[in-house]
Length: 636
Image (cartoon, rainbow, N blue to C red; front, top):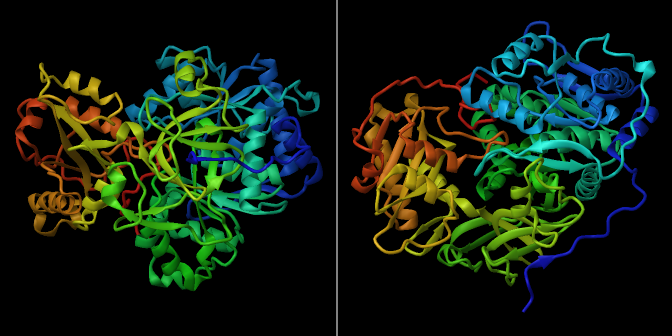
């Protein structure tokens, strides 16, 4: 029996010892070339920001001198920047100082985001905070409010930072930390992944071999700079190959998705990737008139990752945008995670993605078999690592065609979680293998990702994947926003019936069937755009969602909670935080526009009415500041 494992190609030899060495080589050789271009939001008088390699080097040396003067060598430094070139200079400045960069989202007045960044600051023990002049006074006030007034702040967009001429190269080794990548927390609290220079160089080399990148290549995107694909794929990889990175803000994309595609044509971008929802948003928001003005002929590698890749999205996007010069093979579905620096597997950008139609019932039992009912997009083969599929719980290798947990081993697997030995031992302690917590199956050397281990819904002995349930429900009515729902299960029949016990059970892996008098109940929390509800009949919308789930999966869908846009929590990469949504549901912390619940589920929550006609505003922003699939309602 052949076990489900694939071995990578041999890594390239003779690479620089550290990423800092790479940047210095590029800045010496390409001094007057543009390294980065940032496109501000459309507005009167707005012009692109340009940063040359020489300018980047000069600004980074000044920042590094300041960090050395303030005792930040070898210590974490928090980077809290709005989108723009100042972040890049701050990141390279940390490399030049031998400090450990900690990219994070700029805190806003939203409680969840403030709490997250405060947690990152305390967990990392950052000795300084870098931002821009417009935000430093606000950040200093915020630091004082969270009892951290001694943390120094620096505006990295100033021209008079430190003394660039006094800079000396740091004594950095390959095993030193390059940066901390805080996980987005889709199923747990964020943790600081320790990325060494060796990890970063190995993964950048793997990306280069996979995507065929080259010196002078133009890469473009809009993903946040604190997101691993945005940081490593769109910013640092451009530095690695000596290319040009063209960037715009996530909000600019969400307001006007066409701007991303216009940028690709205007700057002849060859590589640009995003989560699946972004391609779907372009399908829904780019008009025929705008399409007629697009030129996508330069685009030759479009990674699709960070959330389930939908075969329907791949097909529809190519069909819709091929008149603009988009090639059919441009899509490159991929799989990766922060704990492996970024890339694990990737489909060949020179061929069309692998699409398989499989037997849905067999897949629910953990077997990949030809049939009908479920379409899967392949995520390609391993690049600089080994990938193995194992039985959850035991770690026993599984044969090709059997669904299990994805384990990864190789030079891109990072050094663990910063200051968290228990979590490191749990995820990184299997003889060099990383336990990813993701479910997948290998077939003919290609990985098909099926879901998250902790999010699998087990009903009547069947393993159901929440994103499939969400997709079915969202297809039932045009008012249900695609990508803005959370399906999960709750268990009734506990001795105490308390929500706290429900949360405790929910924190464990759900890959076991109900036993005794306990019963699993499916719950869907789904955002609804009230302006699109026909006749204002939310009951009909909920019924349509229930019917769609029942038809496709033959399971009862007695619990549907309709909420306003911005309610469903997402990670910084756009993944739905289903575990968080389950906790909020059981806590009674959600404010429904309309809900229908089974009596057993209602007993877990206490007495609440079936219908809640509350705030009917349809324009709430995303609750966590992350990229969000909700249509912002701004004209294209």
